[in-house]
Each structure stands twice: as C-alpha cells, then as structure tokens.
Length: 139
Image (cartoon, rainbow, N blue to C red; front, side, top):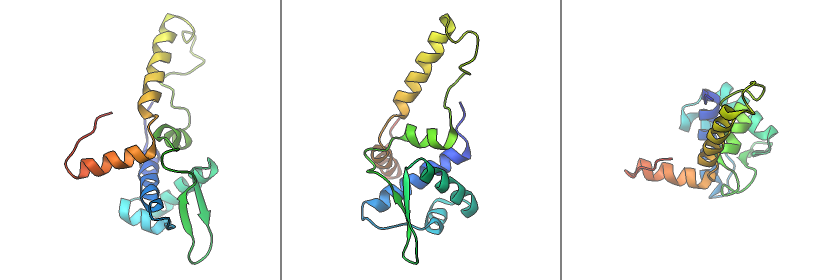
C-alpha cells in the first residue's frame, strides 16, 4: 500500500473543508489550492472523486463552492483515502497464500492499518492544529 499525492492532497483538501464547515461557509477550489499549495487542475479531479464518493457536496453559482457532505466527526481518514486510492490492501486478494498461514498475517496487518486510519476527520484536523502549535501526535 502506498499513499500517492492524490491521497495526500485529498486529505489536505478535506481538512480545509472541515475547517470551513466550522463556520458553515462554502469554499472554492481556488481557495483550497492556494492555501494548501495544490495544483488547481489536480485538485478539481480530486474534488470530483470526493463528490462521487459522497464525501463532498457542491453548490453552483457565483457564491457557490464546496463543503464536506457530512459532519467531520462522521467522515474517517480511512474513508477519504479509500475513495481516492481505491483498494488499500497490502497484498493482492488473489494471492495463492491469502487463505493460508501467511494470509492470516496479511489480513491482521491490514486490519491494524484500517484501525489506525479509522479516525474521524475532526480528530485529524485537531491533531494537525496541535502539531502546528508545537504538540505532536503519533498514530
């Protein structure tokens, strides 16, 4: 499993939208791109994927923009990364050893990774704020 720039940028965009949702305003992709230093065209592709997976909603028009589709307490980091990266497995499910002794190890490893990533976006945002202010949080 490798988290690509799509996953990292998407998580940063979702964090930005979660922060904006605290004051219930819509955020334009241009604003996210500038604040998070993400190429605008790439961000638009990422936002479309997040919309497709019902993590982001949009409003059209001059005053339009994007917001997270659910509360940041309900959306998990795992859900975001899975929407952007697809299968987060560490091995292929069709591997001939998947169901044997080694398969148990790989499935346990995947479950531990999922548990680590299965934290609410709101907690991830708060951890980020604390890290910026000098506190450190390790997953």
